[in-house]
Image (cartoon, rainbow, N blue to C red; front, side, top):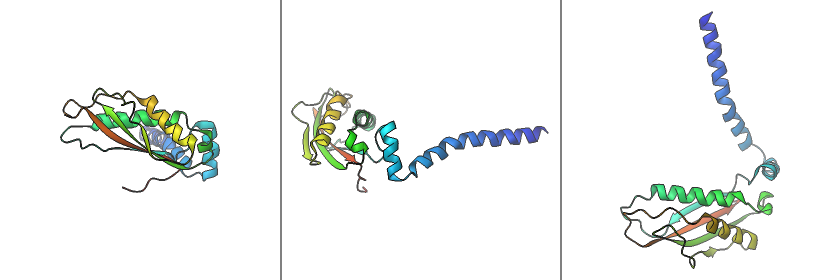
Length: 163
């Protein structure tokens, strides 16, 4: 009888482990209209993607922790205040170019829209998310340059092209 209880306990544990995964899969499989209705109540749609790239060569410096923190900070501030029209399915792409100084501060004159969505609300939203995210971590000490140029692409309800 102990083996039976042990086997049943193992199945129960597996079921409770799998349930959150199945729930997540169910959300991903929802039709777009369901996701849009869901996003009105629970935040931005899942179709919004952020890509961050360095435009300045990084040489031998390890930027892994820096880029991870930069991406997380930008994405958090971007998603936290997603405009209502985006939650209803409005699409657009905003590409910003900016400079981060050695101490992690944003060079004030640097944020530039290099590709507009042609929608003022989306362009403004991306710029505001960038400004709210600064200052960033200092650049790695092994990086010799005084600053680094970065490009951030904000995909609103669009799928980025494959790399």
